[in-house]
Length: 636
Ligand code: ADP
Image (cartoon, rainbow, N blue to C red; front, side, top):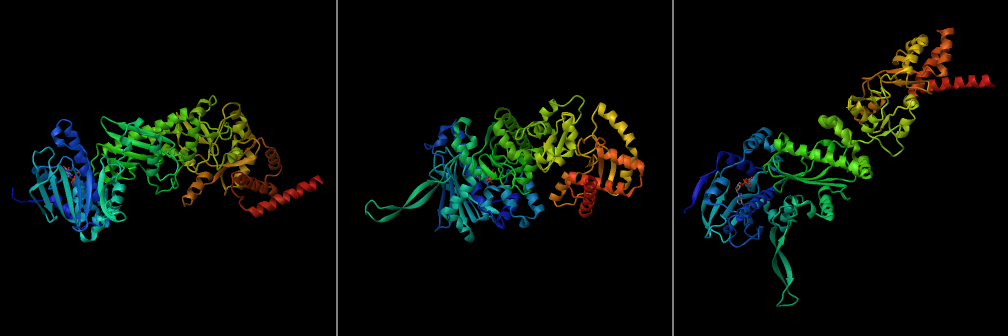
């Protein structure tokens, strides 16, 4: 066979052009791509040898060998896999078979590669990525199982064409020899090669070996050092997630978990399973013991590592997991996705969706099971990650009730450090109680002292205590088993029965003084009315149902935004002696200056009770001092 020259297909030319002029800063991925091809070729040979033993040609020690020749300036990746015939090599290394290629090229054009060189790495560019670091590539391949040493030699300088000619090769498989560009010679350094392999190909199932030069004492001439070459396996080969459940020791899990999570403690829970059928993937996931630093930051990296057929595609694949489960670490290894899958392709990929759904369910089930069977451990988990999971109430509408079932709450009926759940709450609701009551506060202590709770406590209603920053945002409008969540510090509260009638009567009785209060405070409040909340305190301020309350105002400020202004409603405790006294004063002289001053004082007290400052602290202090003097003089 004489040498033949072939033109590359247009798409290949475009890809090659991109590679040659690439500004991509992680050109080392070329090695990942070549090793991955070799690993595939070995997998194929191994599979075929099951039915055709000739493939083996007597040798079954599968391996991938890296050889760096500094003098020649070449790096060679060799495998003893399936190899290629002339026809196969022309097709494989002259065209592009991937369905994603057109999209890839289009995305690159749209994104202007020079501005976004990192796109290259995200796409996983296969064999042609060699041309990022080599100006000439020579491939010698011999199909496994052929009777003679006949092989094929492919060569290209990426100038639009390649050549093929007959060659000889001792063993089956493929050698890919890269003639390195002058400024890419660092990839000929053994430590650099090792680094790259460790980084991207550590879990490749087949050994990746390299001859390493070592100094040894000469056996002939004692005391004299001589240099010897020794074959060293560089990758750990441990694709832990592909092993059976019983084949992995706790120690191996711990080591692997620490390796991928950069955590120092052992995982709290291991989720290891394989899916077969419509979607084939293996996943090995870990729930950490402690929340990692930064989990609440916006730029926290979300998602497990994505492998495709044992080749690492990316460290964090955020399309595989919902953000409210972002604390989960691990690996997903898909058999269905193409190796050159891009971030863009992942976003609306059906396979990815299927995996995500399956993982999400598995994690939620695992947590639910942990809550059932290992409650103490679950409590520790919840302390660390309850706040994160809670986000799911808002973001995962279809699973919101199962997420709600995973949440633990303190309530007015739980002992310190003990918890209840929404389900327990609902089961313990009073007859005719329609809503799930909650109060949000900084701490349990602060909540329990709140005047807003007085009547709930007195009448034996349970109130959930919420102390997370996002509770107000999440709970407003949330419904659990058809019961609305209702903040006790917002909107009107009325208890059924006797209470309701009493209140109607009192509203008539106190109408005069209430109107005066409304009038006097018209610049500060939206309304004044009698309260069903209060028992011992004289008054309180509440937000109207749809308005924002002080907790929510804090959330706004924490996000660096000024909350919208909203006036509150002043609620008055008709049972408090202060009001009988004020009512009497009103009936005596509605226009009295003293009464007006007392109404303002009342408002200031309400502000203090909700945790705000009096409108004018100096005025307030003066007024209180005046009242004290009067009281002392009267009693003296
Ligand atoms: P991909 O590996 O994603 O298919 P590549 O451009 O890397 O894309 O490789 C194209 C094809 O070339 C492969 O599908 C395979 O058929 C063939 N090939 C590449 N490297 C090898 C190898 N080491 N041994 C056998 N075949 C190979």
